[in-house]
Image (cartoon, rainbow, N blue to C red; front, side, top):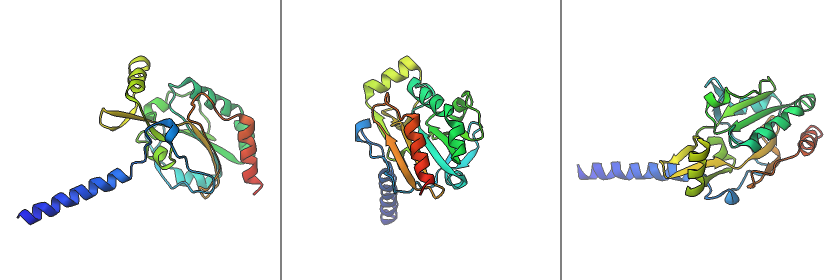
Length: 209
């Protein structure tokens, strides 16, 4: 009896240890380690504005992808970035590239977006599964989390009860049809974003290879 309980307890601890090692969240934005060009993004199932499951890997197979990771629709810098990319949407489409923008926003929040295009899709990573895989997730310090919650009224993903709150560092990846990263831009300073000209050049370089 005792031995059986001991084995059960050890198995439970082992499962917890595996779950803990699977979590890839830095302690600050400056400590994230984004995936680099030459590495492959593994498939993750995300949700669209209707709550429907979307396979990112299957979307990658369609055409070159501009993958944008942003903090949420509540962030003015992110909103401006999404709008600026929307201005070059036709040019990207002419280069046979699609735009997929991902944030921790819920599907309900995504439904409030004014972006509506078959070549420009917003997806929800509300569990931060993709942000962790990409090496972009980080914990906000308690003071910042409290300010964001209380003054902006934002609901963030909590991965450690109520103690810590996590967000992704804003980033842009250019990914080929096999999920291979050809270009990456990630900046802990969320106020500094990639320019449209540099993004277009990065997409063109994929087509030339």
